[in-house]
Image 1 (tube, rainbow, N blue to C red):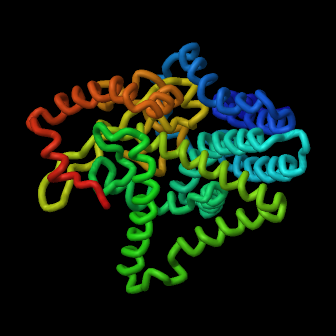
Image 2 (image 1 turned 45 degrees about the horizontal axis):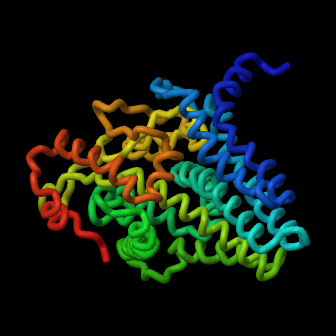
Image 3 (image 1 turned 90 degrees about the vertical axis):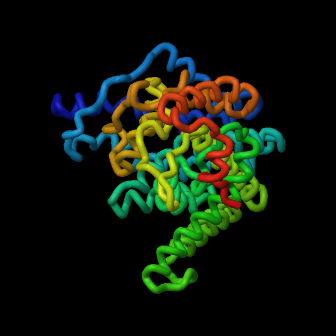
Amino acid sequence: MIPAETVAKLHRALPFWASLLLIPLIVFVATQGGWWLVIVPLSTWWLFAILDQIAGLELENADLTTSEDQLFWYRAITLLWPPLQFATLFWVIYYATRADHLSGGELAGIAFGLGVAGGTIGINYAHELMHQKSRLERWLGDLLLASVLYSHFRSEHLLVHHRYVGTGRDPVTARYNEGFHRFFPRVLRQSYRSSWEAEKAMLARKGLPAWDGANPFWRYIALQAAFVALAFLIGGWVGVALFVGQAFTAVWQLELTNYIEHYGLTRKHLGGGKYEHVQPRHSWNAAHKASNWLLINLQRHSDHHYKPDRRFPLLQNYTEADAPQFPYGYPVMTAAAMIPPLWKRVMNPRVRRWRAMYYPEITEWKAYNKLTHPTPR
């Protein structure tokens, strides 16, 4: 008989296991084709947007003295997801490249659905894993990122974003009035360059050249090449096209999230190239319960920047008094970001109120940002 305490711990963690339902759903829609293919994006975006309205907000915080062994059922989902995602991805590639009833458009829809799962869940779990001290967890994070051809995200996120968030040196801090369709190609270009430069600088401090074997970019390239080769062996060039299509979709999902998390928020320049410390006010947050289940508390983003290695069940909620809040959860806000006029209508007044609240002494923001937060080339 399972101890009551174990059952209670599993029960508390169970809502975060909702992502596992995507696995049989993806398999089902891939075998059916047709309009069934829209169910995957609808189940992650709109279903959880509706559930947010039903479930309401989660304002309570977990006890920070909770021990690691008490988090077993929370950690388990992030450890189980990678092999399940890989198995699903390559089974679908195997099936879809041999199914006579699937058209080219349906294959594109399958790739899109796989990418939605890989971006909404896979990269998000990779983000959790790569922040941990365990070698196994970091490796699983690397594998998840390689499966969407975005391995350099680990270097960019750990070495650049967390250090330079809210400044012009961070490519993924969206500038005020910068629409997503301008942000996306810019960040694709700049984040790869900034992650390479960060790793190169780390090696230089150790007296090593950029091309030394210790550079993780060698691992990134090898893992990504292995995934592409496996896709080719399983499904030929069509398999590679499916793999690349899902990877692009996943990266688009990731960068949509990056775009909204810090839009228009800047750290004050202190002179001499230095900025104030990262504060809760430098991240947008959302306390919507259902989307936090899906995204393993990613919406408690201010606390993540305060304690980057804090496991997701322990991330703390901040109120409007300490950190800016979205009016809706990430599913709705990322959808709004795809329509720049709508996004700016909703968010620009909120950014202006944020500026007046925290930095009333700065009156000419356009000139200030141009001088102190130049955008990297």
